[in-house]
Length: 361
Image 1: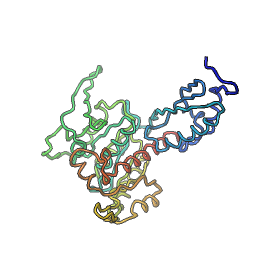
Image 2: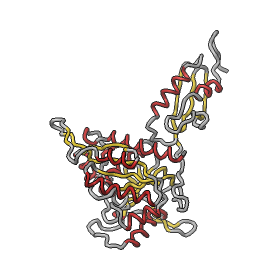
Image 3: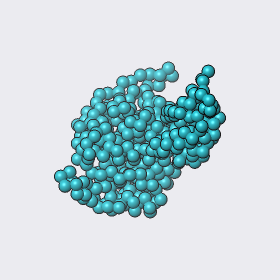
Image 4: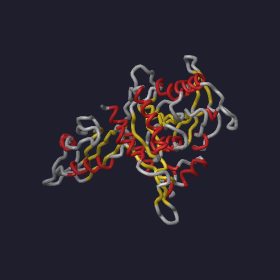
């Protein structure tokens, strides 16, 4: 039994919970206690410890929640120390009701673009690694069959191992790199050989990559979609159990015009738009620090306003981003100024937050 000096208040669990009822979940609304986000309250003398269970390990407002919890609990008479741990349970998103979920995968995110050359695969790879850095279980499926780039960008090589389930189903084991699981046709063919397949063959392969790969358990499966709105992209958008689509563009008009087509394609097949990422937004000269808007400016902002879709972030053009992609070292794991790792992480956090809000809507 804890001993208290004269005049010292005995802190109770009810006092702690009552205090935490005044802390609102900043994005979902409702207080932390009512949302059952407070776990394992432990009180020893004046020391209070508890766990906050977030809806995603990539929560961008974790520090705000911590500060507000410390403030209200700290005002309880007798509290001398506060310890807050964080955990997360990512809620599965049902996606489109008539489509089969991938076993053990909570959310499937399509990373898409209206045209090639905007850095879609770079964004997809860095988003996946950034989510994993936050503590999420993440997979990356390279669905750009005719131009697979995931093996190069993540420095992964080799062939996936295969096994048979107790039910006789053939399965592949995804490769792993930088904390995420990977699958790509680039692991199965000679890198110098082109893929000369018709649409139905590509679709069949991608279904195998979805349902015949041992992905589980995953919080997020990021799918690097083929560019454009052609047959393969449309079929995938219609058939994948998608949580939503993340759209990548560059600022110039020629890119944003094509992006509108991609966004309308997803809307027509009832896939939610999670947001827009503007890639290669500007360039900061390393010798002078001067900013250059090489591809124009404001394109993604205008697009977001026009279609009422959030702009999740603007990623500058950096030589380290390009070099890292060529060397198999994603920019988000780098520490050079022009790798813009923190911006990639912020975009990933905003993406995870959007998914959480949708799941609880």
